[in-house]
Image (tube, rainbow, N blue to C red; front, side):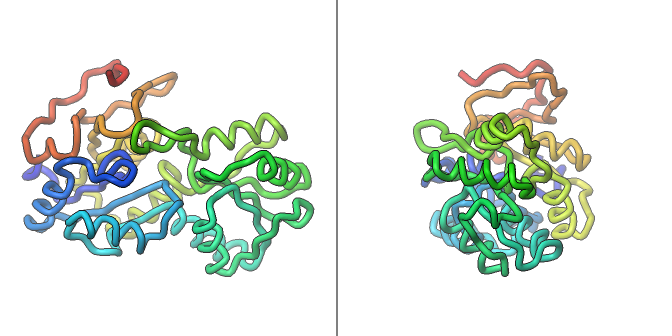
Length: 271
């Protein structure tokens, strides 16, 4: 696998780390690939930290990486908003660091539902009923409905927590308004950012992640090989979607171990 691919795109949460712990062997894998001169890119839908914070976190775990090798959905969203809705007022179901990043890009925050131009949903571990009602009333008043990501859950130490997808579903049922755009995996906006970083050269690329409906689906759309790892979300469900990875791995460390059988159809739940 190391010889076959020149570029490796890694999801972060559940693939390189989980909670505050690195996936065993992930540091060795990344450092070996870097030593061999491979192109590395990290992509994340998580918005509860800045790219600088993710960079420092990974460096502290011994990963030999550069900050410009990290993309998250906050970065992609900020670019879209500053280009298309400069100085508009927004309300976000999101954590303080996410809101501060949007304000830093020139957006104006308000928690008055009748002033909201754009509602943005992302992971929020401080979510409460008051935030949901501000968001719902803003949508009923005509606010645009965007999301930084659409993951239903986020892997953490000891399990998973509710993520943006669950909140989006609740708001859609509450207001009968549908989400308009999202900016994480597997959105066109995220894929364009990846292509830009790689200068539109996706030849001999492998994308690794723990989610079928985001990571693997995006890799399939991009036309690159994919590897599904078992270190993140607990269930691998196809549902009505035909999403198949090229490989199924226990973890990214299997790249060094040489353990990467091609995945058979009909993915099973992780035990």
